[in-house]
Length: 232
Image 1 (cartoon, rainbow, N blue to C red):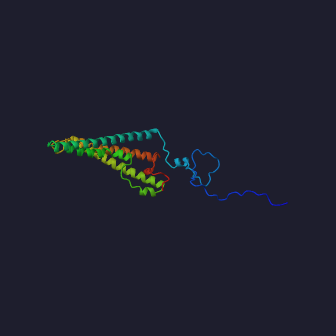
Image 2: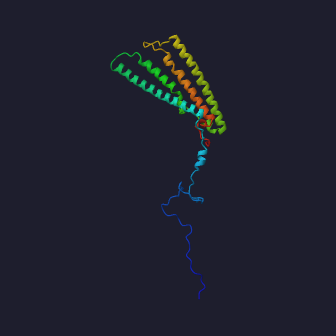
Image 3: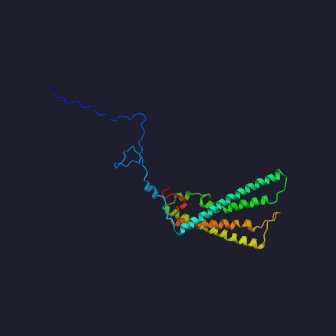
């Protein structure tokens, strides 16, 4: 009799992966209580992702004020776009009159100048609302979150001071030109208080937009410089 142990089949060790195999990626439908194996990429935690962003309080008098200012800024943006469009149409009419009909122009050049300047001034609050101004955020990116907020508050205070100053003296200019009957020294002779009114309108509404941004920042409705809190 033979005392040899019964033969047992050997298990494969370090078998290569089949050709064309792909990595397994964890999906949201995976509810297993066991931790994923090492070759599975874990999904980011949605709760921690949301907590890294600001959770602004909604409603209240401050929220209503910010919403109202944003609506005014959007109206200013639409008015500015309309003024640019009208200016372009007037330029086309001017070219047609001068080079096709060989007729003289009286009011077109001056109207285009006033419309372009007015569109720039009236569009200031809208550009501030959408953060369309030139912004260099290198310094805020390297600051800590608390220092970044302090810097944003200081900049908004400077913006409030400058826009308030221009708005105040713009109102004085409009009143003075209206009482003095100022007119442009051209054939058209437009009353200057009309184009001058774009100066106080634009800067006063820009002041309100800066104030809305300031209130949104101090009440944690917005982030400083719109930079995420987990940014470097």
